[in-house]
Length: 251
Ligand code: ADP
Image (tube, rainbow, N blue to C red; front, side, top):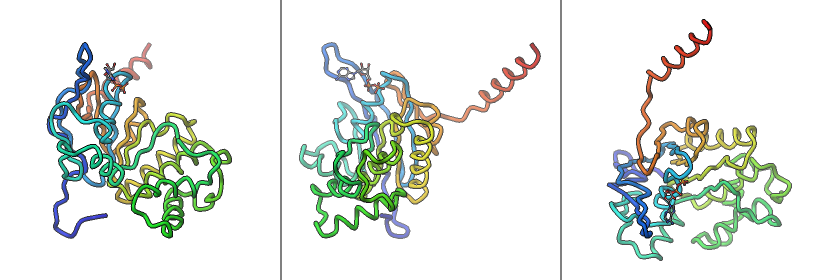
């Protein structure tokens, strides 16, 4: 996955003044021109309230929608001029999607669900079972290969979905509210897995409305009213919190 020694790799994601306005009428400027660079191996969260532009951002980053302004380079590839077929192929090869709903086939085993992701890529049939097993081992489900989703917990189902996203060896794991359907214990297990994948070198991008989930990223970007902004640590906030606690003690 990594380049040779000394060879500079392009960022996985590079937005150059990327923007999207829905045509309407009336036109809706859902994402205002923004710059964003996500380097290989980063764990970035994007957080914002409902209606802030998260889905718009996700659709652009995931090559599901083309921006109406600016340029988006994925792994250094300028996506602007791509025809639909090439865009789809690039998406399939480079991006592994994880959604809030797991989208697993209920009557197929974990291994079969992961294998099915390889039907439409170049993986030879003979290699699929092995690759699926490896991906499931990577997410800690090596002992549940033959379990059907209805016999798995929510957290385990999301792990299968993550294995399915990883099996094509993407350069980016793009997660949309990955813990949105999970109770806190299962959510925690999925977040720990994402942290482990990050430590093993995977580039992880998580989009969420939940500040607690966003805080797990090594870097957090906020989105509000279509404006993407790097979140900076603000020690002032901590002081404010301390002041608040002090006040509570004295009243
Ligand atoms: P979020 O995912 O954070 O809830 P969205 O990206 O879905 O936000 O929406 C951002 C803004 O764009 C909102 O004001 C929403 O109403 C608007 N919007 C989303 N999709 C469309 C569309 N297809 N046409 C027009 N406006 C849209």
